[in-house]
Amino acid sequence: MASFLSAGDKPVVYILATGGTIAGASSSSTASSYDAGKVLIETILQALPKDEVAKYATLKSEQVLQKGSQNLTPSDWLKISKRVNELLKDKNIDAIVITHGTDTIEESAMFLQLTTKSDKPVVLVGAMRPSTSLSADGPKNLFDAIVLASSPLSKGKGVLLTFNGNILSASDVTKSSPVHIDAFKPANIGYLGYMWNNTPYFLRDNLQRHTTQSQFDISNTSSLPQVEILYGYAGSSAKAVEDAVKNGAKGIVYAGVGNGNFNDEVQKALIKASQSGVKVVRTSRIIYGPTPQWGEVDDEKYGFITSWWHTPQATRIILMLGLNAGITDSKELQKLMLSY
View 1 (spheres, rainbow, N blue to C red):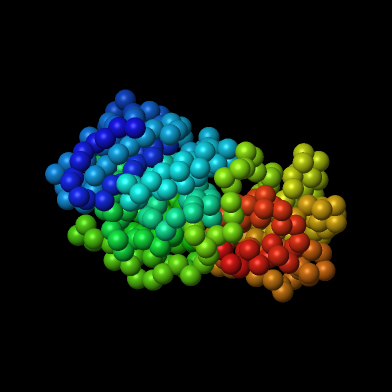
View 2 (spheres, rainbow, N blue to C red):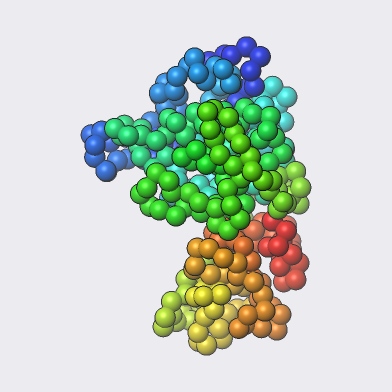
């Protein structure tokens, strides 16, 4: 652990660094190519104005991981979540900021949303450009995250993300651009609020269950059930479904066309998988809009579940945690999709 600065009686914000583009470095300030996760958090923090940060928080930092988020695994989620919960039990720590690669930040955020056992603020933040870029967005995003985490208004809001002045809920976020700095959008419901003049302005609350309301406990979990995401398209075959089952998947999230639909061949394979005990969740490859029950597929007849408002990747996390908790009844798993 390293201390960046002390600001007297200001809230203590603990920064957990995991790598990613925000910690990326390039040989040129104008190049588009770079290596993720190369810069340590102590160096990243030096890019922030100490006198401005000191108005809002005392910072402590820790390098918990150092990699591009495309290389993160469910084991890493468990490591991060357990460390977050350990830190938040400390009465001397008021909030946590996690620096993270943007490729899978929404997945880590959703996992933390369902496994953090505290109402203290937890804010994830990243960057679309490396720290060495001429127009690096990481420093301002990180500064906003510190201000957001230090605000009493953030308490009880669940796990948050902030990018480009926007405040998002981990329950409703997706990456909508691979390259633009305004890459993160609400998946369905809307922004929680905005950062303006170093102040968070919240427009709504998150009514989904999260953090202290979550039933999931991973304190004694060392691994998570295998759940695969499969993608639908014109002419898709059943082989991907069959291979997932053969390789030990306990659940399949099928990102189908339209309202989570699939062709007859794939449907037969999914029905067979469901009958063998593999839990099948229908969702959509379309970014926005719900995937509800009672469409073209008779979900109750086949024991299928639908994702409703969740992206395929968020759906996978809910299913993994549900199965890890010993929930195997499709109707009970369906309730999880609606509750979280």
